[in-house]
Amino acid sequence: NLNFGGGNHTLSDGQLTGSGIISINGANVTVSGAIVSDVNNLTLSNGTLALNGTTGSTVDNLTQSGGTLSGTGEVIVNNNYNWTSGTQSGSGKTTLKGTTNISTTNTKWVDTRTIENQGTVTWTNGEIYLYNGANWNNTATGVFDIQGNNVFHYLSGNQPKLNNAGTLKKTAGTGTTTISTQLNNTGTVQVQTGTLNLTGGGSSSGVLQVNSGANLNFGGGNHTLSDGQLTGSGIISIN
Image 1 (cartoon, rainbow, N blue to C red):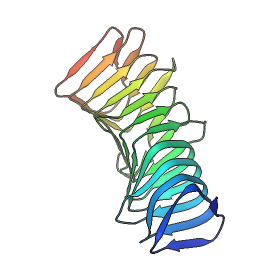
Image 2 (image 1 turned 90 degrees about the vertical axis):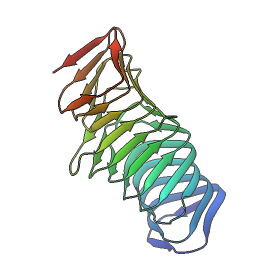
Image 3 (image 1 turned 135 degrees about the horizontal axis):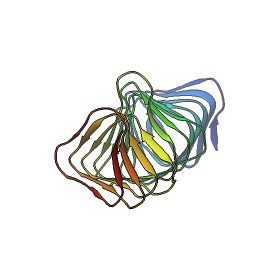
């Protein structure tokens, strides 16, 4: 384990790599020119990791239980991302290629950054607050599985966007999940149980499907359905 336990560290050249554990726990680490590649396990619990390189940083497994992942560069998580608390910020991008688990009651924060899911995200607990124009892109291969009753929340600044080109589905939780960011759907949105409450406006040219016993509620904002399908044996409500 290489642990950055305190202080300010600048990696301006060289390489950060290895099959062991690299942990940020109380330090501020800035990567401005070094290459972060083939890191097997990266853990961020306290402090800041700012990835500013022009070459994408590659990590097999990322665990974030606190702290801030920031920077202007891209970090690519190939396998598993476990997010239980903390912030993602900066003008860069986090690309999720494998399995992402978002859990615990702690709030997760996305400031400005773009999150791109190409794999499977399972969100079971904790509010997700987005602000200052942050974007969450669920690509054509992406699955975003909502398994709880929480809020995907527009906090402040330019309105964030949830852009779904893949599958966005609520499969567990009989209560209400509210999306107050803008939701732009070109893929499929499935409400299999409970209520999916859309309050931030947006557009859809894909499929909006509501199962029996479930409810898709347009609870606020301006929504444009320009193509696609609005269907299902459940309830569709404008409230």
